[in-house]
Length: 274
Ligand SMILES: N[C@@H](CCC(=O)N[C@@H](CS)C(=O)NCC(=O)O)C(=O)O
Image (cartoon, rainbow, N blue to C red; front, top):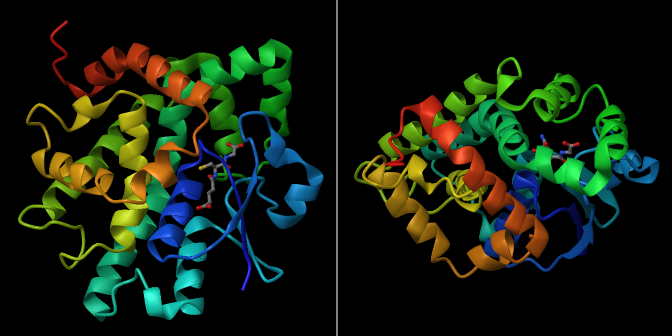
């Protein structure tokens, strides 16, 4: 069996698949697609993934796209190391989490990441003309059906972009849902580490990398804090989530995120003590 994953360090969806593959103990090769330089718009890559997004999995010549589908596919192919619960109720509960990630949390994360950090990175790396080309290259149907225009508005207007504040609040609402699910439980579903935890990890880690741990620390969401500490302690965490992110991007996320934090905290009513 050969697995090739087209991925990028800044992609939460790609990180989810890397985590699932490594937790399953699969060997895979990577092709790095720099989505902040626009490499996803290469016509050759778009033959594999017409939405021009990462990740894409190629398994023995078969192309599978969409991170949730990829994780489900891998468990069908390699059932011995399944990360999906076998109990039907627990499987349904895990499915609620992965569905919510795809429908709500992921679009909120794209908005939040561009709002707080990537808009500065794209402008810095590509310059104003390059940024225009980058924005114009996004297909109409990409991360979501309105991502092209939404990304454009966020890069241009930041927190003033219509709908931006709602995405910050939506993101936060998922941390609250996690807090409730983790009450008295170590993991999100059935008290066993599963695809639900794998699917949520990149989104909590994204906030951590943007210096926004204040969204759960200082007594705000103690169950999320405990859960994320357990996730960070897993042997695969560093390899899947930190090592793949280039140093300059790690620095951008931390520094831009730190500058954006007061605005985010204000939107969410979090005290920052200066
Ligand atoms: N539904 C897709 C979404 C993939 C997606 O949104 N990928 C983002 C990175 S996490 C991307 O490639 N964005 C490219 C862009 O914004 O142009 C999945 O789950 O794989």
